[in-house]
Image (cartoon, rainbow, N blue to C red; front, side, top):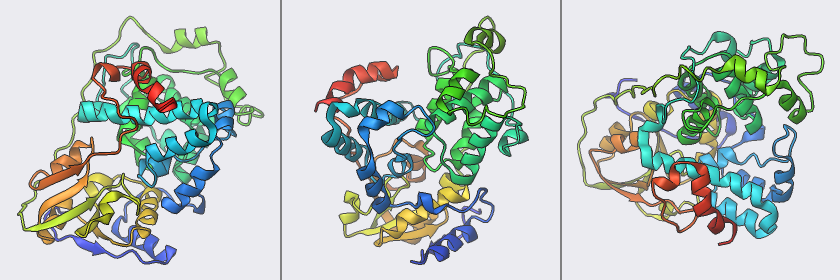
Length: 409
């Protein structure tokens, strides 16, 4: 897209097919498939799912692919409900019986706080790897779900066809890509992020680094016994492929990892923003970001013009179903004008002088708004506790400080 081309206002029609048609028209090169009805976006659906969460059963079954998981991640990622709302709802209904779920909710806050602290550094190796890593490109057989392994192909096709993958399957796939296939974690993480409905730069990048051991004390890997147990052998029964996981953990560790030749941490270049002429007007604009998509957001109570921009800098690599999920969310936000273009060009056309938006750890947002006077509304904290860089060194240190306040406020 030409950054100096005039931005276009996008009116999302009330009819489902029409608003999806708009998204397809403005993002003709978006990969992926249409969003399935199972994953319709918006706060109404988010609240329905939250009410259905069983905090007790989650703790007992979450590691199983058919376990009682929440499927709230895309709604939390896009701010349809806040993390604090989810925590308070579950805690009020289940108390200590939901400790495991509250613990898992806290991981999302932890990744977010690390992003605030480190900025775009989370997109490079946070630490030297504890084992030698491959730096290979992502091969086509993985991109297309044609590895020949029924388990991995199923996980990939879940991602491509729905944008949702069970957390345990995400870990298995990441370990396969990084350690078995020796794919560069960043190449795999970027591809994964573009397809995930809940794709979040902090959670995604740092989770892949946890698997790789560039943000953890050791690499994560698994064997066939582990996969068979938690998948009820649905992929192993009848499988005729040569299984690379059918070994003891000791044998796999010896096969996969070289701890004597570990490389230094690698820094990945971040593409600079395209240059755009910006002018400051006299109007105040509320900018709705893609992580605050709720009609209940406090900034939507303001009388100022409120806009959302599908910006190729932020959303240009997103799969079609991701973009359509956002469109669903925006339909519920009737006072928000939806635009397509460069955020700076949109603000220019609207005569923006001051921008009001939610605080964010995303450096790209800060760069896009650099020419304007910006007021950032602080995000609602999960608990009123000040965290230091030392507290964010590892999740265990974060939980030591935050856990008591989350479990027993």
